[in-house]
Length: 315
Image (cartoon, rainbow, N blue to C red; front, side, top):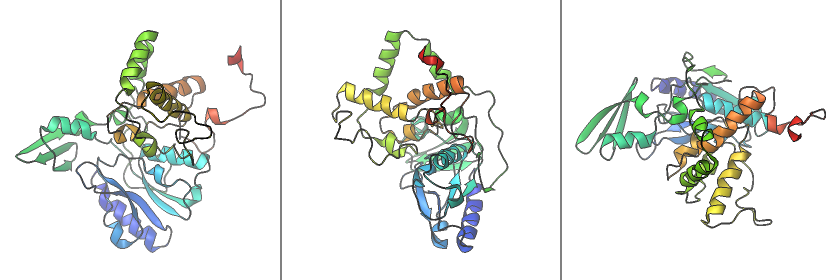
């Protein structure tokens, strides 16, 4: 995917020169390997910092919430689905956005790469489907397929669902991937096994809220965890408070989550937070035939009201 860099820079320069946008939101190299940063390019010089590779994993839709003016934004499949959600939820207008669509073959999990490298990684080069990581006294080639983020390995919407310009040919969608395989394993557990599974899952949580801050769905002016009047959840590391935070945040994402993986990538403790939201995604698909962010013409099932709703579930 590194060949996309020149095309992104070319489009960004054109959009800024023609005055179609005030800025282009994309990625630039981070200060450490494999950790690219969101980048606001508003001039020809800053456009030259824009890049694209398999480390552009954060969801850029997080950076358009309630923005004014016209914005160009680089969007892979999951980013574009969250842009749809933002538009439907009136956090940005479609006419404000010029979406530069990027067909995506997946982002790499920096933790998996580090585990395979055998030393501190000082640089990473990408060529086709191979990565070469290098450090003090070592250089190792790794297949990208072996270190994909888990959400990317099971992604079924790799191409942007909306765009104004596509920088490459659409990639083949994965038709044999099962995004809910881990959910089914948990569903087959006994109640006690489920309880122990989730208690162990979130036990490393330090309540840093990196998952919330990285999530493009968490745009409330004041998060429920920060409320003091009333106080919905305690501020301590008490197990009940930690549990309440994760469960309530997941339910706030119900019917809206695109499984972009930004939460897990941001978590400093490596917690598989998606185990909560994937279950709700599965329920929404089975109960309502709904996947988030695929259409501008319909609101999420938990965000709509019908006066003639039979409400059979109450019975």
